[in-house]
Image (cartoon, rainbow, N blue to C red; front, side, top):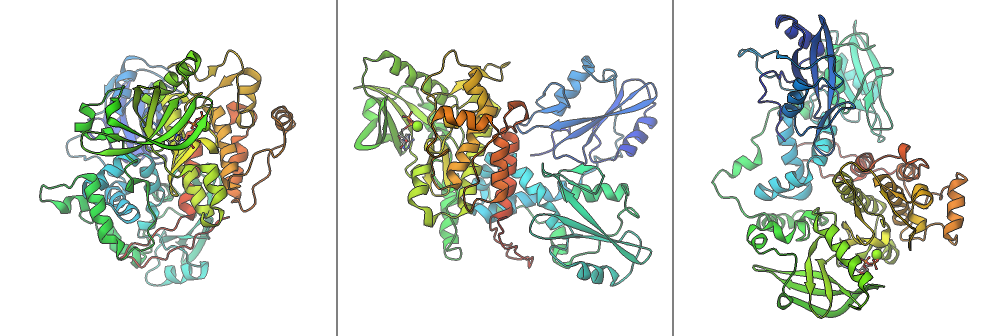
Length: 613
Ligand code: ADP
Ligand code: MG
């Protein structure tokens, strides 16, 4: 999570555009003179500032969800160094190639951003409180959840800033600003209501002015007609440099005493261990759970608490013995049937590994004679073999014995639709949002790896427990080629038409975008607690229903924001439909806006009541 650009001698950190131009002037303004700086608007991004013909050109470099970097519309690169190297050989859309780095002088340190000083502590504090982890287990959790976690932490970082006064009224903000000295530019930010909007209150000429901070559909913050930012604190930092329509730039924060304590950096918890001993992840988590259970009675189970969160092969000693084909002696098959299909049945079992025994689900092929079915299962295994994500059912291996068997991790609470319809009273809407967010994380992983699922539906989302979902059933899935963004089926098969986007049915074209359509239908099933989509309609009727512009109604009790997302997943044209990177972000923002987070023990900050719109 460290800034990958710090090693570059032409990287200046969080400097403004005009500072960058100043540096380039000092550097001599030769054609191709360039420097790199941190983008002050988007998270994890940079700006490449370049001179050509005595003019400045600034190119934003975006950090994408899969961790790569690109100049808008350009090729993806694995890091800022690789990106700059590439553009030093090929202009590829820039005014010229990068010719001469504008080197940072030794007495100019890389300028840190406000968030840089806070990030590490916030990460650890968040993981410690929400997941109750410490030490190695916490580090592991941080690695597994990045970059999702980084974004989440960054979007709530304003809560730690001295100028943030949480939910106070307009009158109270004026009282606080008028108390003490009243210089121009004294300011504070307050939360307006539970919808996540904010207001800026600013002193000028001994008068307080109030501005609304707007939030657009994609989750970006802006002043009316102003520049858009990923986070509130980036907006504030920008307004310290430029008035952007305000009466004055922001200067002195009106300090919220509750937040002032947070401004002094804490020693990161990981360093406090400091004795050279780091407990193994599971043991550390268990230890903490034991300790915390006494005072956190209602703590709900988190995915990371389960053995299914990481692969059994994460243990290097088990990995040493990993083979695609498992030995029959190590597999114990129970008579209990978990489910069945035309391939055969799925049975419960235990797989004996070197150090531990793991619960498994075994897909047993019915008849060896039907070659087609066997090939299908081999293809499913081939796909699953390439996937490893906490929100996807992992394959442990294949076993060829009395019949061909596909051995998978066990998700013992079964399919999502059945679980929800039988436990309607025990599962809150927040819980459904939590599970569907996890499904979006699994789908985001598939999108990034260029796999299409083609059978995403509530019946194929399996639960490890009430708070942990995994995507399963890769029987129809395909790996796309590096240059393809869709799979073309030669002929239609036994397809789940009610889950399929129009382009699948009409043109046999399958992409991550058509999986997004199915995700929308899966959301509908989840929020209707296992309801059957499109009621009594038959497949072909559904097609004309969709093409006439109709869509399913919102399930009763479904939050408005979630229904809006479903409708966006059901955008007719796949080009205009959101991708999983967007869908996951929207699920996450909504989930965190409604989920109860326990307040930090030392901070008296208000705890917002969970609100569902
Ligand atoms: P099909 O292609 O026939 O839909 P699935 O892979 O969806 O096959 O499996 C059928 C059923 O078997 C599921 O609905 C579920 O009840 C059970 N099942 C499959 N995999 C698992 C698993 N990993 N853990 C628990 N149950 C499973
Ligand atoms: Mg299935």
